[in-house]
Image (cartoon, rainbow, N blue to C red; front, side, top):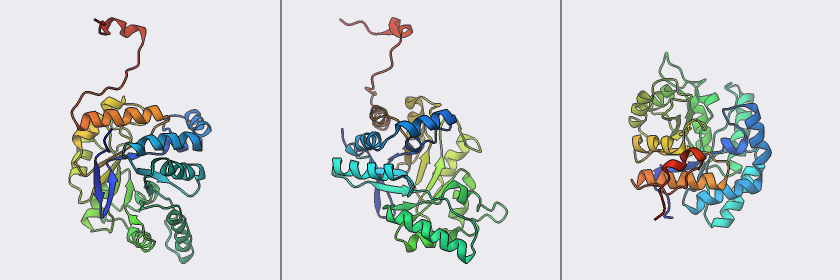
Length: 283
């Protein structure tokens, strides 16, 4: 398999497919039972195998590193050693919205920890970004303070948002960010406005966009979800996907490349008795 297509964010080359971590860390968007299942089964060894599959294919960018997930951070190191590639990591930290000296000191310590685990990109979490999105004044309030703090620590700042306004206002105010995270999927899952409006908003952005939840947290079949996002995004934009197993990672890679290259996917389909009547007969 050839290396996956790439794009650039500032001077950093990243894979257009990004390894997501919700299915590593227990954020299923389905149920507490599913969250607990993920947390119980996704060990350092399992994560290493999944990340290694992606990295062997040139997907060397991962979203969601955090200081309080040592098994994930260790798995990334294991996969780097197994593949001989460096993993480019993206952190999405949450922190206090207060700008008192004490609160900013605490935020600084938190950002230091993200730098220490090797984050190349630091995009304040939706819980920060969207809370600071001021629709009345069309800006992001005190976000410039945090962007500077991120730059000062040698990381590249961006925005993680669930609201399209945040990205628009960042461009309008020339906020010092290099990229953005935005939900985008064919089902409109967790999206606040219609899909076509989000697509237009992404195409009008000044910087590359990292889209998330392409399969609507498991609500869309991979072929449907990937066919939509890859065919409606710009060549500079990215798609983030999470997996539970190495085989799921292989399927995501195969289907994505088949859509991008306009070739038929060779993924083996699930088989049930009800589909026997349409199976091709062997000659």
